[in-house]
Length: 369
Image (cartoon, helix red, strand yellow):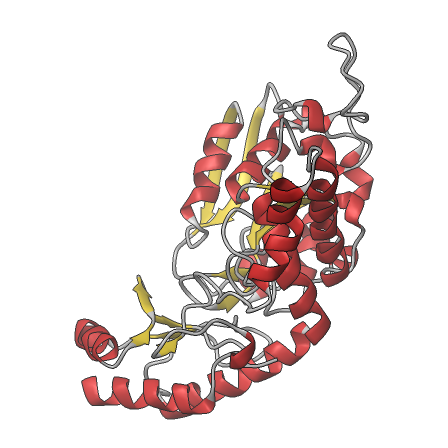
């Protein structure tokens, strides 16, 4: 798998932390699975559409070492997190204390504040090294009900030690939620080994699946306890029973699905998840690390994100200080696509990026600083 397998623009695209490039196989797959059944068949296309959504769940299960029954499609992370929080009877009608980081994506804080009746959000201060287990040990205790962990922090390029945090939190009696939006498709994720309570993610970034294809994963151990409030006929054990007097929750995570579902985003994303998974996330990561290492080597005084493969995400943060705007101007002029947040430039080389493109980025930054 390489650049020729994707629709690539002119110039250099290093924004996979935001939106991954579309695979060239995507339009034909989407036409076959979504458009053609609707366009050509003399019957309702739901059977084939729903088969495509189940393919999405199965592809996720294979990629993350889990079972399709533990996944439910969601429009985005906020939706999935809201539904899971509201399904937890143990979190209702009392004060809930949540540990999270000020460097978490803001939407997650908004949901935690609004989806729970009485909540106290306790933040690990901004700027802490979230890749260091000591940062978690210094704050985590038995007084928390929930621990929210971002596997990867989008603005710092740090990778949280999820496999160490989860057992530590559970030993203290805390439920654990993990956000894998920025790690899915670039870092190894083993949900069976992690055994978090809830995992939320998206396919728009490294998985190159497009927007709208989010997902909620719920552990087998806790699934039976989940009683979602936002339900509909596709949350039913038998959606086609059509008895308004009888509701029975689906025995799988599809109990979180709700009413008539959107299907197009999941059909689109299933294609890329399968193909990238078959190629191997480990190969994508190896290529990513080779390109990151070149940036670390060439710009050692400007890389503010971790430079250890076990601690870094797929994104390097390049902090050029007062030269930031000049760097952005030069990069834009040379048609090199990156973006900037609080801590500097965000640069994310994927499998479709080359050593030459990274060298061009490095030279552009050097010329600006």
